[in-house]
Image (cartoon, rainbow, N blue to C red; front, side):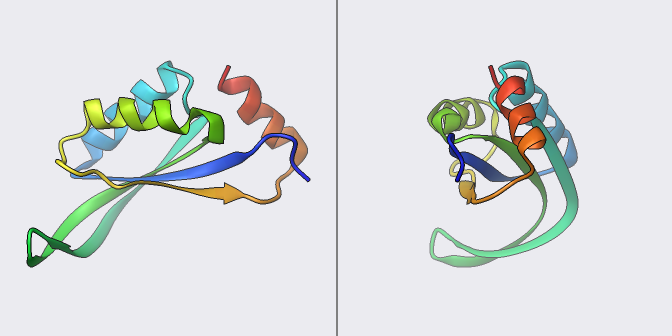
Length: 107
């Protein structure tokens, strides 16, 4: 089993520029080891009592669970949404050299 808890974090953004900017801020702060940005996501959701639709970008970051609260603070400070999506799922297994790289990249 994993000695450290690793997570994948999903953050939706309003556009590519915002996803890239947040990625750079998180990387510079060593709160993520890397970011993947996926464009052209159609999101349908409830917001303030109405169904809404938006074209968004998805930022996927790999990091350690212990950094999640700091990551949330940084994202909230740099995000345009009133309530940004910032969710994490555990990495239950992984290639040890890759997980070591995440650890080394986030210190």
